[in-house]
Image (cartoon, rainbow, N blue to C red; front, side, top):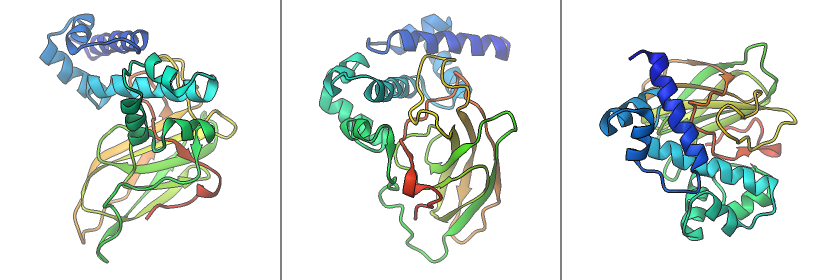
Length: 257
């Protein structure tokens, strides 16, 4: 099967996810939509999107929750139910773990946070921790805006980053005191004046949202990390949603440590 045919099959599944955000959707259901065996489907989905079908679906649900929280007057309980959660407590815990703040706080802040924390236990604990340097390139057809660069344990931009920086625009960046481990460098840019919580059905996210990634990068204590280049591009329906709330205001140009 050609790569184009595989991507079309995965896009059919992602469309089904959007249609059924509030309903139960099993791996068997998704595999039937893709017309693959269950085990082949899971493997192919991960190779195309960078994450598992369940995590992608969970991310889409929380992405829709972000949109509803900042664009409607629905209660948090109603938002929770709308995106398929039976328990508001489970929804709130999952939302905070992935976005960085509780749903009510996310709504209060209009989709932005003053400052992101970093993952627990990721503070500098050795004078030999190395910086990770690189450059973000924004093609000329993309609108300028703040650029977020974060270090994550997986290829999906959710949860607390290990390190991050928010820049005024594309250019060189540095993440200090990177701990040993295997990390993904994930970047995204929302143009100035654009909504801070882009969301929507596949293919309907703002065309101005740009994303990029590099990795995995393995970091060893005391060893120099080679610079990385990240070229931002238009978000694609096959990209996992950007879940974490982007810092704004005083957090701009701040490197977490």
